[in-house]
Image (cartoon, rainbow, N blue to C red; front, side, top):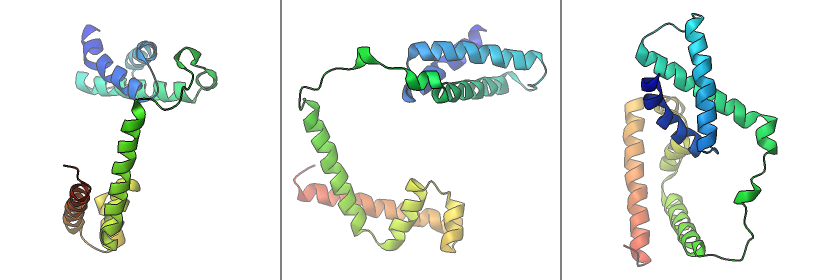
Length: 170
């Protein structure tokens, strides 16, 4: 049990914190998932090695967390203790302005790319299509699409860096 905890709990806590949760949520979900996974093992629903049991436990954790996020109780939870009054712009406004500036520079660089590059990169990064799917759409081979994607990323990077230099940024 200690090995299961050491191997899987840090992963789960990281996963839950990245997905709208906190440490207490991770502890609760881990306990529930461990009981469910152990029960599945004892009832014969799981057959496999110790390594695959770790995967089974992690999948159980994920499903438990997703179910928790979908629950009505989670949707009604209010985090008033974490809320503060808005006092106007904070020190983060400079950081926000920098992020907006970078986003605008990236958008400008994106618009300078050829249509084919925007199609391939857009399909891969925004539509989450696989290289195989893009190859079928473009009537090309997967290897060619992989090369095109790489070259287009390098062009986008070069355009972005040139725009940064033109604006006096390193």
